[in-house]
Length: 239
Image 1 (cartoon, rainbow, N blue to C red):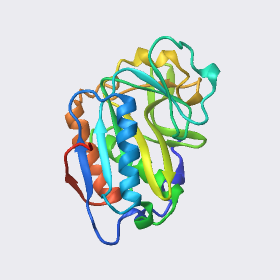
Image 2: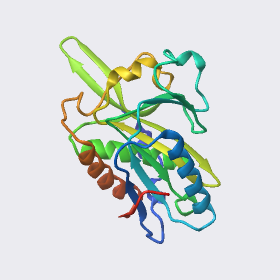
Image 3: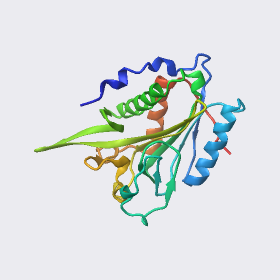
């Protein structure tokens, strides 16, 4: 059952009162994880110091696993399969790789209500809205992080995860973000227990029968982001 908490958080607070647009960046090719984290750290410092604006950075990583601050060693089932990156974001193990759209979200919550719970709900609503652009009904689940879809067949039904959320907030500036499965190799998730949840599966837009491209997913994410967080403007990748 879809969690009702999406509508409980005061999401109207997530719009900036001054209407300043968020820089929207899409990097071509694949970006290494360590390089992306360094760029995020620099940008967060600049935002905190008032030297740069907010940024949403969309990219694609080569195959890798990341371990959040709550990751358990036993949830890394195949340690030698892909590089493993320990990270300061919330959450447990997750996979990033080709065909998955990662969006790093660097927003200044000083201008967006200073409410971490509302911010996370906003991220959820952003993903749910983007999936809605493809006609895919999705939602959150009580006690489970991320965005989920219900699947049904003759004599069976299950819930699969289609998007993950893992963020960190430092001095009210956010970083890390979300990952949406567009067309990744789903077998790559078998090397971990994704987000520590064993009893549910992982899916993607293409796995659900929606032949979406990354460009189409980006367009849906941009449309939905505007509804939840406000205006954006295109910008070059961070240095």
